[in-house]
Image 1 (cartoon, rainbow, N blue to C red):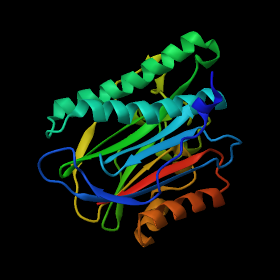
Image 2: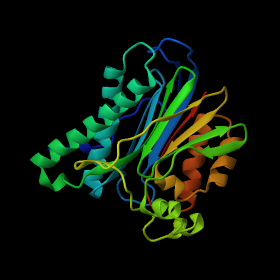
Image 3: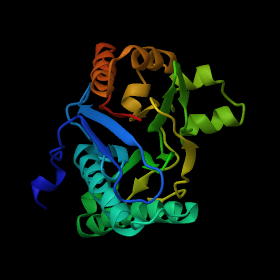
Amino acid sequence: MSSSIIQQRSFPPLTTRNKSQHHDGPSVDVYSAGDSVAGGREYNEDRYHRCDESQFYLVVDGMGGHRGGALASQIAVETIPQVWSHCIGSQTPSIDRIQSTFHEAVLSASSEMSAIAVAHPGYDRMGCTLGAAIIIGNRMYFTNVGDCRVYLLRGNSLSLLTKDQTLVQGMVDSAILTASQAKTHRWRHIVTNSVSAQGLQQPPTLKSIEIQPRDRVLVTSDGMSDELSRAEIEQIMVRCDGVQDCVNQLIKESEHRNARDNVTCVVLEI
């Protein structure tokens, strides 16, 4: 297998601005920026995709050893946006079409991982978690698989839009653990859903919210949320001048905490 497959992709310039050109109806201008660093790991298994033309944003966190994780992430950031753009069409899609198209895109990535694992059994444990945000008209559709997250900053208030799909979150939901206990639990990194060579445990469910001017959205891997609390992320995003400054400061502060994992984020502003 060519080693070039698992090298981190070359991303476009970090900050761009564009208006969606693919759907009828209301459209919005979006600025975005992103970055990914190895953090406390020797290898970076995270990847991200951001496209202000299609207004599709994705952060992916690989699993399955550094080669398998990197390859799974690479497959996801290339396959999911490509299938989405090919299948979604130019007319404003229905909610059902948005959901089914995203599901198809994720399944395509999983199928590609499975095919590689069949041919190369050493990759049979490859997989990834993800967080996604998609702007269509005046709404943002978002989801996560595993423990990547999507946050919304509106005014000076930051909200976590997604729920972690992890063992400890299930224990919190069942009142076995408190949220505080979950943060330091030894099983906190065990995910209950992923995009992998074995398929999906649960299909991703897109939710949506109406967006407003000056909203800021953060899509991040767990390498950042492990180090920074919601309140700390909020403080940084409120004081930053723009999306690139947000990305720089969030990554910098995570690294200052001696981040144990790869740290990746995309920030967009309406």
